[in-house]
Length: 124
Image (cartoon, helix red, strand yellow):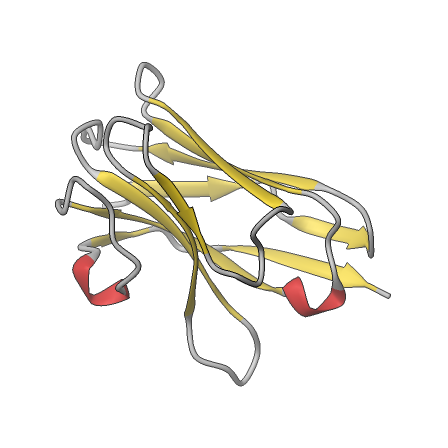
């Protein structure tokens, strides 16, 4: 059973933009905080961005601050990651996750639900 479904990944040139989406499937995650993580080939999964359950508090990894913007629509039970000024080092599989830590967290072990990921490739 799939609970979170990511979409929007693809191939883009450096300096370009992509918008990732994460939709809930089969159950509601409106009361959950949400996060985006990524994993590049040969590297550990890392935190990218997170938002509390209300959508008010957002926080980002230093590596993406000022370039990525996270938003959520609780009516649609969907969270988005707008990625601008992409760099080759942003290339990774991007995962959406949900945590019952409603205020949001950067810790991957505090997220109970994960999507299957979407590939983002940035060419130089």
